[in-house]
Image 1 (tube, helix red, strand yellow):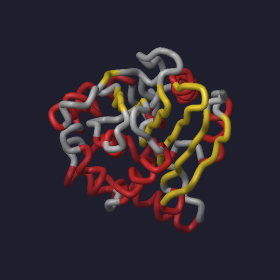
Image 2 (cartoon, one colour):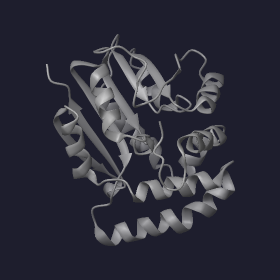
Image 3 (cartoon, rainbow, N blue to C red):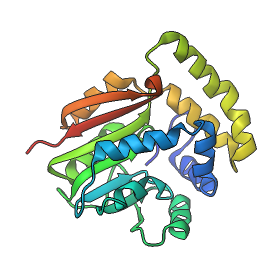
Image 4 (cartoon, rainbow, N blue to C red):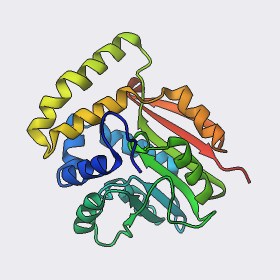
Length: 231
């Protein structure tokens, strides 16, 4: 389910993602100035998917984020709450086993996946801690989690410039390239209200993950968190 904050209810946010599905990947590429492609490459390296391994790609949207994992020979399950995103993904990648699912109650058995990952979706889940526990539940002992999420730039002057971009420059750019520019105002607000790197690491540990660490990308605009499920 989706975080019912910022004056939006879960069903409203789900509809929002349905509405932007067709141009979602293009819009993200424009708004991030192409950085999203670099970020996804770093996710693929961190997940380190291998042939015959099972990987859960949560908040997979249209399935674009799953393609680097399939290229390694891993079996990838793209999972998302937005039926609009999944329908668009099925048109583009009909071979992918796209699956509808709620991050707080995943439709998978315990100890199934060698790796689980979520990129730019965790902050939109209504109960972050429950989602982290669910990811832990469906991961095999010794398996790994990789979370790529917008975070907080570490250099204060840059952080100020970045927040100004989010709230001032992002909406007009979104109006030019997105089918639902209001959605990106909501997303900008959700980025500003998201916990910083250290706070998210603590929540991973509280959910049962060990060896938790993070690495900043693009000066902390994005953080890549990792953890391991104990044997």
